Length: 115
Length: 114
Picture 1 (spheres, rainbow over the protein chains, first blue to last red):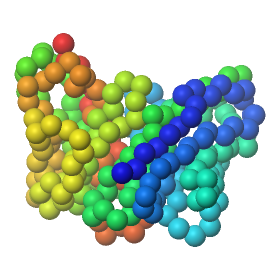
Picture 2 (cartoon, rainbow over the protein chains, first blue to last red):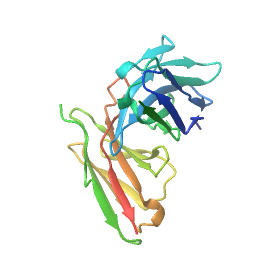
Picture 3 (cartoon, rainbow over the protein chains, first blue to last red):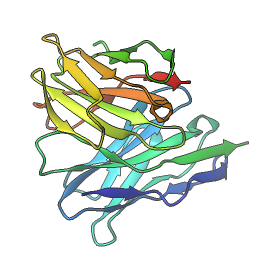
């Protein structure tokens, strides 16, 4: 079985500062990795994903993430955040070997950007 | 291209009642997954439907059931509601032919059980 750990439940940061949201996963098989964002009272929007290839993945809204297989991590970064980045961020994994598309999510990290 | 839609947006039910939630897939998608997101938690996989059959299920009891229709829309039914069923229910659609492995989520239905 897979599991995802998001170590920080909340990350406060000032506008224009850099931010890193941490994600570690556990799996005995190969996985695909995803980051989703959830704005208040909305569904989930895909930020970026790692399937294969380059370990540095760029997504929407200036976010990027780096897959580190040896550390089983997939941390999300942004060099300069905006007030509008305030939201809940979820890391998720998907088992490559199952025939269905189950995503296993972490508990989320709330990013709070203040002026 | 129409996105994933869900209805209703909010629902209040009493313990012991039954509820049906609805989801319309994004155009061209043939697979629907349902997730339960309790307050302050990440979404938990309930089950997935493909070709009108359930082809994957998470750790949810049988009182959670579903349907997928020929137009790929879907329903989630929950019988004998319990207080812990209060959550945001998310529907996600995807295509098994999509090598990008992306799921597109709807805005969710917030269910409150009193």
